[in-house]
Amino acid sequence: MTYLEQIDKAADYIRKACGAADVAVVLGSGLGDYAEQLKDGISVPYRDIPHFPVSTVEGHAGNWHAGTLHGKKVYLMQGRFHAYEGYSMQDVTMPIRVMARLGVKTLLLTNAAGGVNTEFPQGCLMLISDVMNFSGRNPLIGQNLKEFGPRFPDMTYALDPTLKDLARNTAKALDIPLQEGVYCWLTGPSYETPAEIRALRMLGADAVGMSTVPEIIVGRHCGMRVMGVSCITNMAAGILDQELDMYEVIETGRRVKHIFAKLVDGILKKL
Ligand code: HPA
Image (spheres, rainbow, N blue to C red):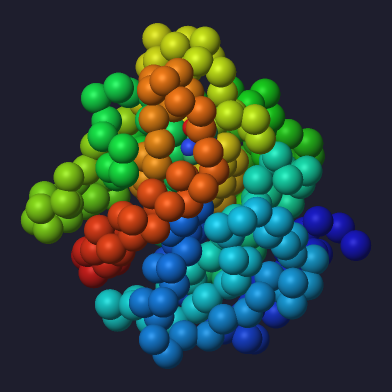
């Protein structure tokens, strides 16, 4: 079976189980509890979706939720797939292509990230203004899937300018502090070294993480409007005189989940 047929099988399953949606939100590490907002939603475990990968990481529950939030039909992905789990780029981005098949036009990506910008307070939220791909990988390598988009998709507006304005205005209206900056993708799973973080800072990164960029690239390839918000769960390596710990990442995510939920709610209301 081809990759495209697998995508269509997965999309058919979700369409039958949950119906279509216009908006999708990918919930990153420690932010998965936002799915509780869907009171009368339907949820399916990833393992039940044909050809779908399964989450292997703590803090990523592995459920596809669908329902109505603030008058909009939404999908919430509780957990995503990462290159460091051993998944191919095709697997990592399969959910985004499935969403495209299901009619999703607006994609809101969230993640936990390390703060490279020393001005950022730990636990703050950062609107992703732009990204850097330092992974050496790209999900569009290989035969172009022309059913989704062009061979050489433009990345000038990888993060949609109108959605950025919407996020800024929503944060301001709700009195939520929202930093803004460049997110840099490295594959992990080892955290970065202090030398790498110093180098990334010089190159213009404000945050670093192990996800999201493949989803942005594929979302844009599919013609979606994409927005991203990072939760700065820890200061990146070498900024503080202490080691990084994944439990800190998950814990910080949980600590700020209320403010995160308020921001996402506010954005969904105005979409
Ligand atoms: N580095 C990479 N990924 C991360 C970090 C980090 O410091 N924090 C959360 N995800």
